[in-house]
Image (cartoon, one colour):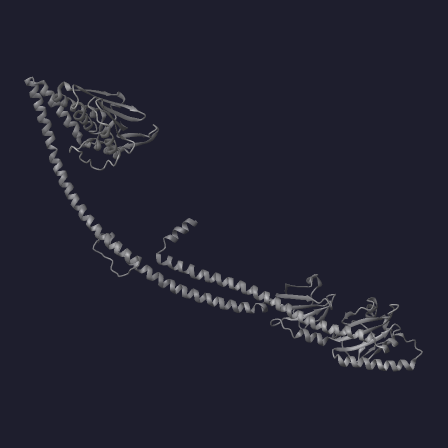
Length: 622
């Protein structure tokens, strides 16, 4: 399926391909860049929001720690007051003195509340349940030593302790603060020698100062800060919180962190940090959508940018693809007209780019095609004329055959047998040489042709020339190239037998060896010197297509052999050809390697073998 889609893509017009290409290299990177920017911006803004929120929470914690620190210092300061120490140790016998001390203590406490306006009230009670306060009083006669806050202070052995919001205590304030409007802290006063609890100092801190420190911090549009005590109970939260309460298990044991929760269909981001001094946890709560307003703004600009890039990319790609495909389309229409046969059409234009070069090449091709067509027409006309002349020339060999037959029978009739034999050999020589125009003939016909040629030459040289033909029966029907023996035998006669003293002998052998037809033409003539043999071998192994150059004597030595070598190699390949061995005053042997071509019904089969004798291939020649 993928392969089919790819082929369909390849079949699209070049204009659409260019548009797709331009869009891919412009729009896709822009979209990818936009997605990357959006992802990076959202993560950076989220990280910065969390860091800024933690910084704000840290500042609020420091403010709260400052207030609680003042409360702690206040309890220490109160515990060292001499009047208060006497009140703690009083036994009831010094009533008038105690009254004076109580008055001084109230004035002292009033001075503290004046100096620290965040203090809602201070109450001091001894171990007997007696108390002194400037703003606070007991609701009933029930002893204050039975209060939970008193017992908590006693349990902590003089350590400053934050109680939190007072719940159900027997202490009220003249200003009538609600329990949820104050935060209580306590500290037990101990005897320095016995470490016995003498009494407890209770201080109420106005929740207003905590609210002012927290509510001034805004997180997004609807986010806020809330303060939880060590037990997870709320110290401060806004009037309309996004979440009612935060379970302690959400905060875990770490001092700070952030997480998100799905509450009532809204995703809330919660960031918290715990104060090691107060043991309170300040929690920031805000909607996740508020934190991504900046991301949405960035996303809007990114989408706008991508849209503009896409719009410009489509326009630019359409224009560029049109400007590039239009001349190609015009050139294609010219080619279609030329394909229909109108070779006079030309591409006109002054473009210097690849399309212009292609158009000029197209014009040159049409000119060349027209020239070739004219040349082909001329060659066809010449070919018809040559065929006519060839048809006329075929009359001459038949007339020559008939004339030679007439001379042959006239010689027989007159008793001139030698003349008759000479004429018969010449007639066979011509018939086999023509062979009805075929280039490949049976080896038997080629042997018969060379026999006729030797008989004619024997008539000339008499007893000086003798020959032997030895052809194995298995290769009689093998086909060979026509007229491949006569030039070699002619060289053997004129350059071998003729140059020696006394009669000479030519041996022609043919047999099959290692899948090849091996033909040997050996003479016992004069032979040739080593230098001449080496030169002839070089010329046979060199480019056989080159014409043979005249030798020093002006004769063209070896032209016939070069011709045979060329025919063998061009027809059958480099594995076939002629190989010469010669020795002065001993003779020359020419070995011909020819493929085996056997005739079968309707076609010929040639078997080629490697140099090592293994079969190469079988080629059918029909």
